[in-house]
Length: 111
Image: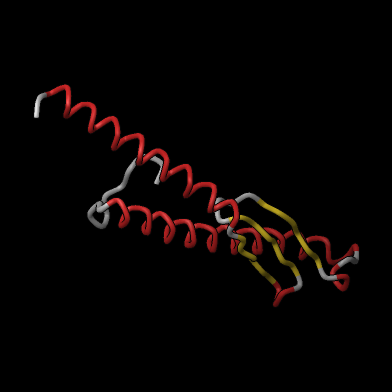
């Protein structure tokens, strides 16, 4: 195999990896997670990529004197959703890497 053929194969492999990465990113947009705080009084829905889809606050929290607690619970629920999104994302990326035959722990840009 000459250098030109090797470069062509490397280019094909790079294009395949890019295609798989794009598919994985699209899939992560379709996977939804929910973070909760305050025993479910505050919920944050997000995609596995971390895009926030919505926030739900129980009516019992809608009192002026509960403002600080609500703010804290929203932040906690957001962080819970982000942690779940990160876990799902990492699991999906690991599946992609295994499908490519990459050794465990090897990281590609964007993974």
